[in-house]
Image (cartoon, rainbow, N blue to C red; front, side):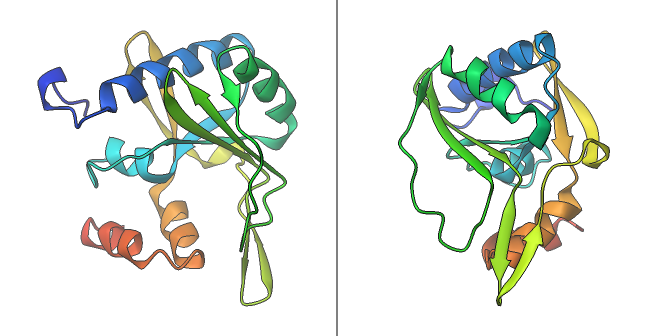
Length: 163
């Protein structure tokens, strides 16, 4: 599903290069992870707008991921989470690209806590990218997450694509 180089949205080439580097490093360290958020929607042909890379990491692997990403870029200072109670939310800048890493992803909605942590069985497919493969989380999960986050524009996009 990857587009030809000349058809990539602005900044996407850099994001994909960083993602390929992360995939290579995570594979070497046996870190279990998957792409979520708008980059997942991009890979599935649902959107062309991607502001950052959202990585979901299996919670037992978060410290390995954090240490590894620190060698590749800069960890940003923590920000307030608002309606999220994510146990590990790390923002990095790698090669000029913002990378959000979440493990123990938790959403608070109507005073109810929704544990949206990555489970390895939630990886629905693998997408080739250069010399690496990129694990993708299930679109149906992201429809649920976007619904819980009141991101109605994203929910509508997914519904328009049969999710």
